[in-house]
Image (cartoon, rainbow, N blue to C red; front, side, top):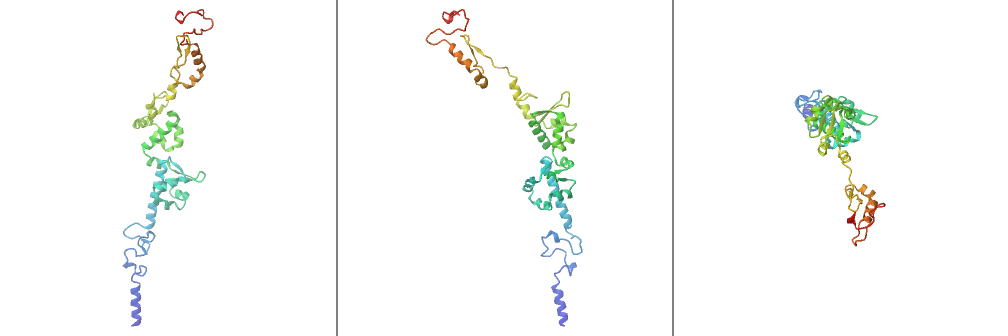
Length: 284
């Protein structure tokens, strides 16, 4: 009887053990609850309520790779490894998936990401950039590049832009005129005898198309000298608007003051060789 009681108490003690009675447990135990690594059953099969742990991890890792690729594409398609801090600030939950190492993580998702050991930078594949990049982002990049190049760039020089943003080539090549027309608030395309010219909309608003404000100032007519009644020249037309020229003509202005008739009625100086050396100024 004692042995029977021991066996019954032993069976009762193992009643809550899933290893001894797997058929009695349809869910995780109290210690397993909330632990994603222990959500698979004792026979290695996934529970009926969700995917296995490995599938969940793979799905989450893939999502982290997609978010990182999208982040890099909006940053220009290439970032340094130190730039990941900005990505972690935006997606703090994704940091744990890159703890295996950036290079290893990129190799795991080589269809989306590529890590360069030489430059310690991360690139996203061109196909991935095109998929996650919007035309508005691309138009903004192109407008900024055109502005840095002086506000107007021949379309034949877009190869320099493609080197920096290779994902832009399939979007712009052969479609530049329509692309600029759709984003007329940022860009303007003007055809010419060649491939055409791209002008930033900001520059077009500031002045005539194809000319910067500096170029317009150079085309303005030069200032004229004013002839005074006493026969002297004054650079007053230049003063204020052209201070540099005013400084150069300062001696001329001083000479003009010396040749003016004084208020006391004293005779003024005449230029050398003037036959009318005497008499009031009204007899000239």
